[in-house]
Image (cartoon, rainbow, N blue to C red; front, side, top):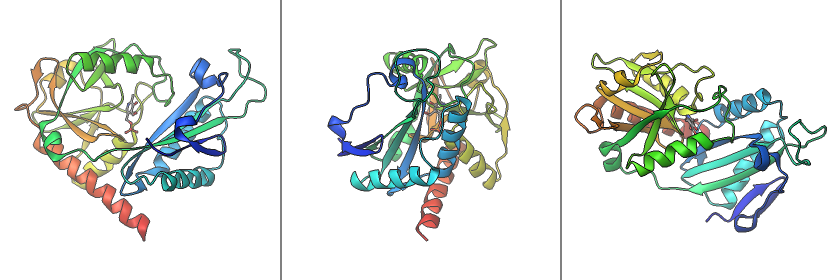
Length: 289
Ligand SMILES: Cc1ncc(COP(=O)(O)O)c(C=O)c1O
């Protein structure tokens, strides 16, 4: 367990860190969060994550709890105290503490919590073996672009995947198009080698890994088609994969009972993963200069 958590201005022992029972995050899921990957002791795409945090907060009319510079200082200090080298930093901001009432409190002070988790980088064999996903209906609200802590449908979907022996659930909208995974973005590569992912509208969370991977693909000369794809198209794809801060690029080798490609990680998917990892390392080198 990490040693410290940051809670509203204080670094507290993680095992004893607490928030108020009338925090609106607890009562109404009235807050947002970010998960920022950490590789070799550095935050990956920190500014992109902070851009999205600011955007999520402003969509919910919650003030930034402190300046971006201060958020960066607190993150760095927490990572230092917890000796975090690989894993992620979790950041959560809620509207604050107030007597329970659906309306916004008049003078709420946003509450901020940060924690860290050390994880091991995924093994190459696990990446090459890939993961399975199941398809489930997307039962979420219509503002999935906001990284809200209201994740109940996502938790239900992930549990359903787990019970079905799969790693992730791809959610499918009423028209039969895949929106995204419960904590990942969804991608396919068609038999004629077109790389496709759903456009970043209110229908999905615009993943930071998704944004970075689009750049990586372009730098590798691979063009990305941003359009919705159906579940049937996904099952007929040559390759498929998911992206997220905790998985980077993870090959999908099975959707429900259908094997994708030859049932192992696809060639282009692995090229994209390697390209993404190289970009992370380049970012670290630049930051170290
Ligand atoms: C619903 C959903 N979609 C996509 C993602 C991937 O986003 P990112 O690449 O920023 O981790 C996440 C990450 O938590 C998510 O919860």
